[in-house]
Image (cartoon, rainbow over all chains, first blue to last red; front, side, top):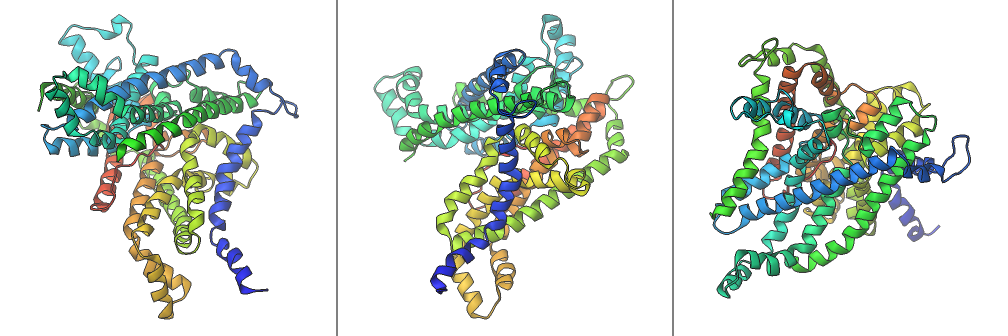
Length: 286
Length: 261
């Protein structure tokens, strides 16, 4: 055999462990879930698991998950944008900017059980902030129908990692917002609102949309934080999947897989929307 | 600084600091009165056998994850940069996939596929759990090492080493590895932070790691849970700040790890 023909297969051999590993622990499990979503209880293929998602409690779980993800992505997006701009704009000391990005780098990675407990210690029924408001300000938030262990509570807690993620993602785009534009606008008599309405927001829009979609996916896939906060009382899709999988409450184990398939579909739609927006955003980065 | 910028920053600082301060104050309280200030919560943590046991399991898992992912990625990324540059986008794409697969989905598929495998693999954290943590570490390990290899001259180093008579293992361990030390460390700190905080997969596969212990204490003992929460945040802080520290002067952008959610 000619040496030229042997070189390519030999060179490939070194990458075999990586591909084998990805197949064994990533593609096989993911494929099993996707295939399982279309399997019948007694074998054979069926669409009934996936079409069954139209019914309760699955439909509500998807609604709640999408709502929580939308709300935290939008509020997190606006708050993150405001904070990032406040830290980056001229006049703010540079130290604040680097402190904010460093803190965001860490806080975006706070999450799960510890984050849930930090909020229980703050806004739970005997939390420090709850008691402070009750004893010092005479505002009993739990008497006014607020509870941390609800959808609103989950949203408040998710913002703790959503806002820093927005700051991390949007800061480079804000850097691209040229200072001269703002000066030019104010020289022409534009107010701060007019500058944002006609210059700032349109220029940043593709980056903002891309970042908000990222935030949506970040919240949509989250499990541990909601679990630690409510022990499953708020039925988000991941919580329901975990509950069905471990609880053996179902006669059809494929329903958990069908819900997982539904998550893939929602996330895939988000990704498909993300790619063209990212491409448009790149035009302004230069 | 303008007024509106000051208001934004004040509100932001308040939202992000209040839970941390409250958790600290909470940890100083103690049963039965719930009054300040005791160190009982910290005493509970230090004298709790399960705490040390689960912390050790999570730490050993992190080490195992780091070793396996380095063993997979160092040769792969090295080889791709040296001989197969056209393969790089393919591997980069594959390494990104764990980002889009929610952990809850990954774990139910994994448990279904490997149910019935030998107990040393299926019933021990060192088997199936470490195996899937390596997948979670894929994106971080790949992109850290990829940046590392891009910043060195792989071809010259390899040719110099081999023309001096070094074998492939000698080249890899004595020439290449010392040069990508910083990148390997950065990937390792990220993997450490992921494994020390990962809850979803450990919970569904029923292994008693540190985050599982934390959740158990949350449900049973409020005040010690605050002390543990601070400790857990401390681990994340330490890992992420070490990352910024080792990456100084390079492309040390803060990174997102999704393992803990």
